[in-house]
Length: 286
Image (cartoon, rainbow, N blue to C red; front, side, top):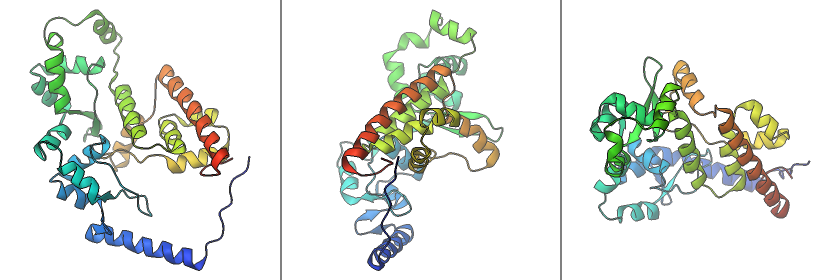
């Protein structure tokens, strides 16, 4: 298997790259270059906090424009105008990205006790949208307030009475589907944000343990490419080593059947990516 060798950079290419790098610096400082805005400036123009804006991007409510040299996301004024023109802006957008953290706050939205909420979440009826690690290195799950309200309106019977038999079995087995449901959502949202076959394969590879990636992708050149294209950790991923170690476990598939599903999906995605590389000569080993 061979790799495409990149041609030597000309002086003009180097100059163009340097110019673009300077533009990226200006985006970081001023927030806008040639109609492209950095995340902080874009959040401010939509009346959102940085966390709310990150959630809107994660959910696909705000679409990123062409990335910068260092991969930083940028946003076009056309996209911001599209968001602003939606009915009910800005309150409707704020309500769609609003989250609550932890069982007590989420239970209050549903109008149930924390123990019932925890059972519903652990049994997979409610899917977290994010997480944070508290000072005790415990995972605190985040839930979209709008989804909690929708669930309460759609499933009122789940909020009272005894747990259904399936939930009782899961509870007896001490099952906790929250990490798996979050990963499923996280991967799905990332896949929706790109049509590039190698980037899609990288998303799937990113949730597999290293041994499974090596078994599914035996070619070292392909593994290097998938690693380079891997998505960054989600917004709010901790930087403190002890907390980051806890959070890192959430990013990897655990149960054997979950690992098997991602391996099969990765293998299928790679077949398509390799086919595109052979037909177009673009991105990836051929």
